[in-house]
Length: 400
Ligand code: AMP
Ligand code: MG
Image 1 (spheres, rainbow, N blue to C red):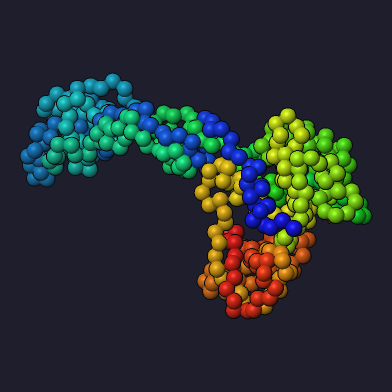
Image 2 (cartoon, rainbow, N blue to C red; image 1 turned 135 degrees about the horizontal axis):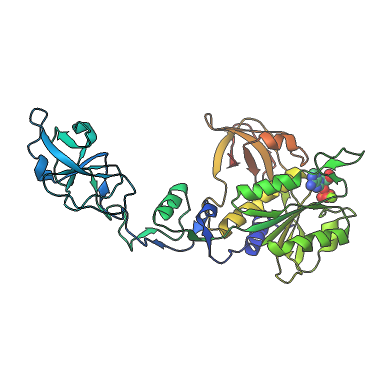
């Protein structure tokens, strides 16, 4: 049997970064910059007012106090967005709004609160030092400065900065494009009445969500019955748009194992020493692009745990994303547990962060989806462990 680490290496080797590409700002959130971003312009782009008030020459209001106000004629009104820049004559004031360009000749802004707010002749009750309430061109960003670094995650604030600099696109490591393909003749789409022996298809929506949650993109999530020709047709119909194909089902030891039957050659089917998730496969398709494929077992718990262990970290690494691996914690077990010798067991667990304890949640078998849905961690028991006593420290993968 192949070890968990060895299969992790094989899958990681199949999932490689796409070449950097420019994407519109609206699509860049959560991706990683492939290049430094140099500011094409300065911010602010021009001297402007930091307050609603009056642009003045500071000397003209030097003596202004509450008791000895200064009165100045208001000769211009400058709202934000005014594009001509009138000059201020000494002995006058311009009414000015926040963000509006400061007129040449003005050296300070008196806030409206220190005046009577008049539009013809303004009474000013406070002096102003030169530079007061003025935002200088370039004091935030000087044109040419590197403002975002390659490898940085694109956050809402980074997008705001890029937009403020007039950039329409950022060059990022693109999302991995993933095809999620569910197999099983027993599967029916939710909403269709079930015949005896049929079940609702659940891996498709679950894994598509897990792919998106990992930061990647889903190109499609179709399902197909256990028929080799139908499977190949669905696969080849969609895989052209994908960097990675993930299948579920059809890889264990029974008959009608459609994935195994349809894919030979460069796809290797192996047993991995883990529970759940023993039957696994990985390799490349025989399409023109040699698209990578990872074949997960069909049981929903096995499928999602396998995705967590093999696919999610590889997808995140290939996109340069931080936290490729789930945070690992150590917690105190609240109960006695057993684990099969020679296999790495991943139990569903509930981690209580306030007490630092973990309790296994639901049976270890791989069809217990209900428990998986309310677990917040995977409890990892290594290959050599067969019994763990309550009170022992164990490793958990924090899924929160
Ligand atoms: P298989 O590996 O194809 O033998 O599937 C193992 C178990 O998982 C069987 O009980 C299947 O019915 C179930 N299963 C496989 N694929 C899905 C799916 N997409 N949704 C729900 N259950 C599935
Ligand atoms: Mg099946």
